[in-house]
Length: 87
Image (cartoon, rainbow, N blue to C red):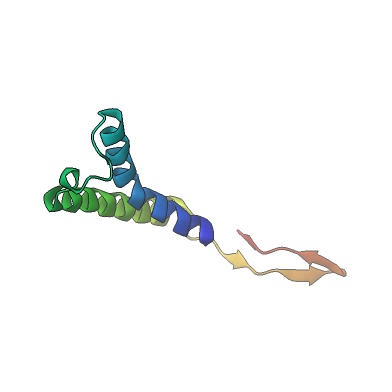
C-alpha cells in the first residue's frame, strides 16, 4: 500500500518538478515568486490531478486478480503453510 501511495505522490509532484527543472535550465529564478504565477500553479495542479486520476484508473483496470477468479485464503495442509492464491 505504501508503494501505491508513493507512486501517487510522485505523479502529483512530477509537473511541478519538471517546471522547476525547466526554470533552472533556462536560468530563470526557480525560487523567484514571479515565475510561479497563480494561473501556472493551477495549470500544473490540474495536470497533476489528471495524472493521479489516470493512475487510479490504470491500477483499477490492470492490477489485481482477473475477473471471475476465486480467492483461496492461506491455510495449513499437512502441517505446511500454503499462501493464499486466486483460481
